[in-house]
Image 1: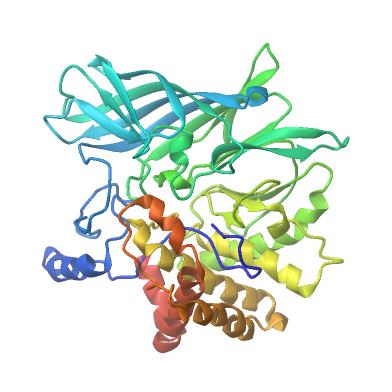
Image 2 (image 1 turned 135 degrees about the horizontal axis):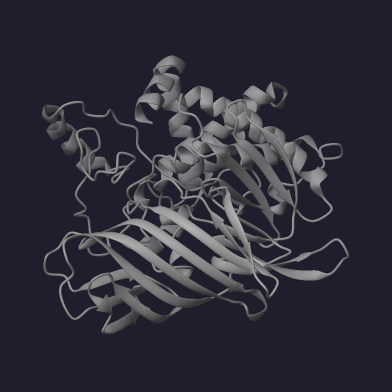
Length: 473
């Protein structure tokens, strides 16, 4: 997620330290010792196992405040009905879980500003108690007998608020073609606001799949991470839009957008549909960002040697947006000024800003979304890498911009300025409570992190650096 405090593109939100994958059981012991020192990455990864021969899980013994390990989420089936005029929504979520403790008769999930009507567990019945904690932003469902080991299903019915805080599932206003001010809805879940939209295991390592549907006004466009699977129209003029199941991913990458848009689209070399959604009547303002996105996806496909893993890549301009951009997988959201631009009248600096932000967020589709940090203390590598990558791809697309020269004065210079203060901090900061992560979305994580990545690239050389990236992915 690109933060908005600085005028130069520097921000986004996934994370991960490069390391060699162990190929045998003998290799795991020394590597595990090393991982204990620097922090674990990508636990519960693409293979679907928590600790296999090629994916290490470092023990969490550093004071992190985490949800109990009694159960792990496998898949969420989420149905949301918007009540836009009432600034509210109704939700039903069924979570396939893997119960790992023989003695647990309760499940604790993250939840914030949600009202619960009912919860039940398959084969057990309704929860006998639903306890909310504002201090820890959690909800605990207690049942009258222990939950059976293995796979089960937790079903929850609840309501939530479409707030105006630009966090969680929130409302904002836009102007339609006739000049009327109307409401729309969108999400911002990073770092810890998915819990405002659904009860969930809101930690980056607790990956699961999501299969979602949205009931929205019939004239509005509904978007999520995956392509539309079907539409059911209702007698009251609303419609329910269902979406394909996502790959396994962290909760902070889930996203929804509901509003009226015009769009421009193109296709990457590998057949990915890329769309830019713009305010009504302004599709031409999305063309430059679209060109940058196509070039970036093609470049990343070639660099990582792993094709973009989703069938579509949407980018949406949100009129009220706290950050600069957010790299939701398959549905990247942006502050309007960081996506929409008239390339016929814009200055070179303005064009660079849009290009940097778009390229930065699309780097996260691999580095952060596909391979994700285990915990927020590795935010620096996620953001530092995307900051370095945005400069390299921009330089490749527009060598006349002299991006690497600008990197020294802008990114490295900003990092040195902040690093010279008493308030500076290491690029990797211990984080016990997830709420503390907001304090490290700064020039140290982005700019100093990017500068360190640049140094590693310079020492290893292009060929070895890219080879390492591909092995890591």
